[in-house]
Image 1 (cartoon, helix red, strand yellow):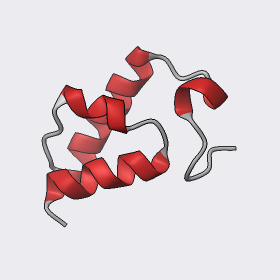
Image 2 (cartoon, helix red, strand yellow):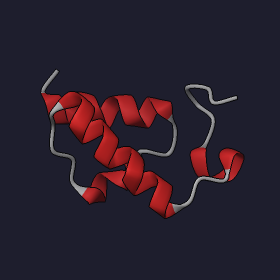
Image 3 (cartoon, helix red, strand yellow):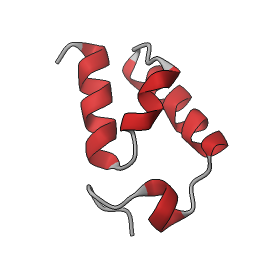
Image 4 (tube, helix red, strand yellow):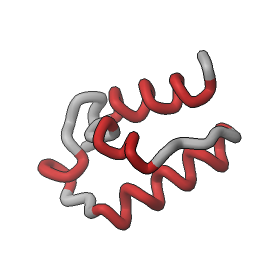
Length: 58
């Protein structure tokens, strides 16, 4: 089960290709542009929320 703080790579076996797919889906869903350098912050749902919020200016 994915939780806000569970780690994608370590606990859910997500690889870098999956991370890029998620990033692309977030950009499309929220109509934002996210630099690939932000992937390092997107280690769990909390990080994803922060990155999307920053990109959207929320």
